[in-house]
Amino acid sequence: MTESPPPHLQMLLDGTDWASLATPCGTGESLPAALTRLLDPDPAVRAAAAKDALGQVTHQNSIYEATVPVARYVAAVLGHPAITVGDFGLATDEPPHSPTLVKLLAWLGDTAYDADDEVVAIGERHDEDFLDEYREMREFRDQRPMFFSAVGPLLDHDNTEVRDTALVAAIPLSEHPALTVHRTELVRHARRLLATSTDRRHRDRALDAMRAWGHDTSGLENSPDIEARERYARLRAARASWTSGYSEEPPF
Image (cartoon, rainbow, N blue to C red):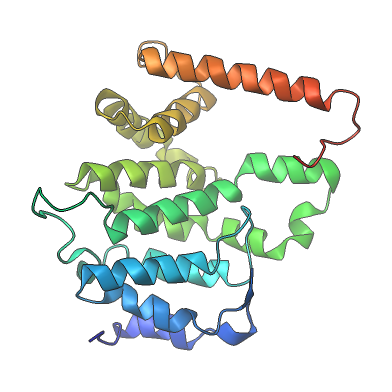
């Protein structure tokens, strides 16, 4: 049976009018129950709760009214002991899975990329008032220091999957002007990831960030990295040729 969340988490749940907040398919009325189950002692219940809660605010790389309250709650539970009970040290014959903590970090990072500076720049090319009109995205971006403060302690987590996913989440969050001072630390973690990880997406994120921050990555790339970089360059060139002659990019 799911226990009640600690008082500060309960305040987040009780202090939000979930039924009034838009989601891709309705309102967030059912979100408090799903978010509460993230602290269930049963890892299977937590995994199902994460799928339920995050799925309700994830659609087409968009930020919805309910996204920021969910993100606040997710950030608040990242350091809670109950979030990882039974998730690590599982028997080797059990099927591979990502702990709920990793899923929450990955979602927070994906959402941060959906609201990063590049997305804003693209939006402002079409509408100079993009952020003023996209209140939900602006609110998420304003909250990045709070999200980073929750993700930061996990950069040195004992579990490799957790700390690598934490790094990938921290990278877009660090675009906030108050957080750029942390980039030296993030580069150290990126170097560690690149020395150990074979995860294509994680390596791409780490390498892209280091290049954007002015670091030479030539000595950190392996053969698959180079192949991926060249493939992405070909895709970008092909896309540029498709859009030539259009005043705006076609909808594909």
